[in-house]
Image: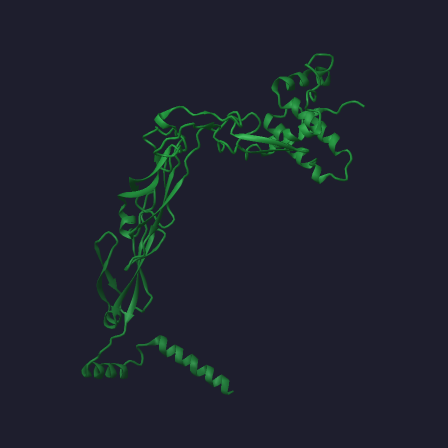
Length: 379
């Protein structure tokens, strides 16, 4: 029976890119997985066919020959033998290839991946609480960060006197060992060198062979204007030192802005609840309110103001983070009822109440509605 076109096998059109070929092969490999095709007697042959097509099309030279001569490129000595020959034709070996292709990224690379001589250090997190005033004006702050730093005694190599590590005899420097179990090839981290590909005969006494030691570092951090809770600042290379001379990780500073006694924040805007006397609310007047920059602003209170009334002070809020402009500040009035009245004050208030029939329209309207409600219930 004539061979199928390799592009048709993988569901591709001629001229497909290397990335398209790789993705198509992955889809086919998953589709023809033995666990999904127990009742399909042709699954193994189809898998071999897909693997053979991939072996040719993934190689630029073989692909070029196939595009020009078709299957004839690999017959009669033109292409150096059948693509599936030399161990690629059996199912176990083929599945080992696709296992590498599909899961190599999670295993630190596919077949032939180089050893991981030095591991990158871990990223660190530091929680920093600042005041609202600090968030408004920004600041330069020094923090103390407990972390791992490169060992000075061995210069990060992990070996006494800075000697060079030797290649791990178990994994031959690959950092991984393999075991074949039926159709599967399982790859795991080398137990001798913990994946580093190297061993140290005489570990450094100062760091016990790790190449790093625990130490507290003082770092200067620039807190920009406008930060808010949840803002993250990244300091590249200021994280944990790498293992045996590996590159350091990063330090991430998470900002937490403390609650303020006077102001409540809403993005770039600020809210301030200001109590005013009943007299000022009724007659109107002028009050002074604080601003986040430490200054004062004079606010005119209209006569007849009620609790909850808001007034806006433009550009008196928080600066926008890494941007232009500034938010506003909103004043919310809270009309205060007087307490601890003298006899004379009580007398004056009662007299005022007797003369206030038309001065409380909201109360008058409310109780009129209440009377109507009660009358309807009686009916």
